[in-house]
Image (cartoon, rainbow, N blue to C red; front, side):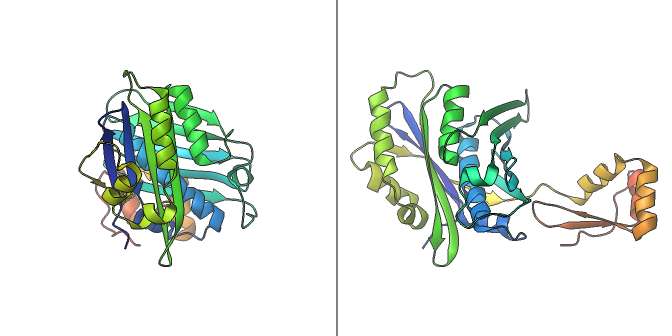
Amino acid sequence: MAQHDQLHRYLFENYAVRGELVTVSDTWTQILENHDYPQPVKVILGELLVATSLLTATLKFDGDITVQLQGDGPMTLAVINGNNKQEMRGVARVQGEVAPNASLKDLVGNGYLVITITPAEGERYQGVVGLEGDTLAACLEDYFLRSEQLPTRLFIRTGDVEGKLAAGGMLLQVLPAQDAQPNDFEHLATLTETIKAEELLTLPATEVLWRLYHEEEVTVYDPQDVIFKCTCSRARCAEALKTLPDDEVDSMIAEDGEIDMNCDYCGSHYVFNAMDIAEARNNASPADPQIH
């Protein structure tokens, strides 16, 4: 039976290489809950979720990371936003027919992978790479080589476990500023590549690591839970409304009697009537409850 979503970090005692293993099946299901995406779009969001979790774990600061695909194909946008607490959310936009067996290129068309890193303190950083690889993992490996000059391999697996969507992945990365031998990294990558989706998605992490690396010395650290969490709130919506011209907001209220703001990520609705708007302008907190 699959475990709940967790990220495990591990280090090889005899090589200057670190690894991560993550399962995100429950979080993936929650991201998809309020949407009716075509199957290939669901799979890409699952892969993006795995990748974002793994990338977040390579960062050494408090803050957010957003990994997004954008292009001129039928899926114009797919984005996962996460943070160092492994709180994840995501959404996709589809504007055309998606074939049942659509590849990454079919979905995105001419497009880019954009990675935005926003530390709680310090400068925001954005990296952009063209989609030259056939898979998301290949595109991200390309990104790491260009931006970090760190050999990195990602192994992303999605599937179906007992009738439920399941996703997970692993990352290997040479430790910066250490004398890692290319052959050592390739050796570990070759071992890791043998992981079957079924093993990764159903077995405890410690068993997966033992199966892959039982001839190596591996230190595994305490796991971190991965969860779905949206950052939307009634207060944020009220703040957003206050940035609009008053007459524009007033005309929306006059027309519909209320303003219904919907969160793309989680499907929450926040409804504001004339009194709520007046209170928001006076900086009071609107009393109307959140409606799901």
